[in-house]
Length: 243
View (spheres, rainbow, N blue to C red):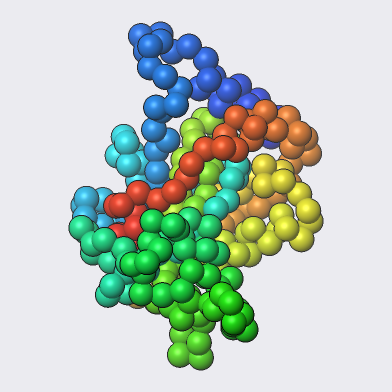
């Protein structure tokens, strides 16, 4: 337990240090800090990142494995004209919560306002039918792409990242989040490692390992409170380069 206590001490004090004065940048407001995103190095990345590693989009540092704590989870949906986006594409519709279409697209979207919960063949409501592009069918997954967004903090260095997952990254993340939902525990109650594994094709997907519950998760609540209102919506680059 000594190593766990030491790591959590680094995590706790390192993360809270981001809310203190930074010598030389005292005049820079906290609200303008850009949280780096972890880009998955895929064959279709437009920035030429190496394959099969996580890339920090601010520093271009790469990581094969990170031990993290999950601070926040969010889901969204985006509908692209061709189903698979390319750099420069504009979405036909988007939902920030994966449940209801964003108001910006009302009147112009080629679909309904109500999105379907993932992996369910729901029954339509006469007043508010489920969007046909969000429905799972016997032929496969919806045209409207579901995305998961994770706000993570590393155990050893207290670095905070946003990670966006789509496609084959959804299923393993469902299993990860189910750990917390079934137990009724906060997401910051456990630590685990993230890495990438190559699937049947040429793309890499997320892999979660070494999941373990923390003995004193309440010590991390101050970090959760500091970041719980942080926006973790996806960047344009992530929406057009993830599979």
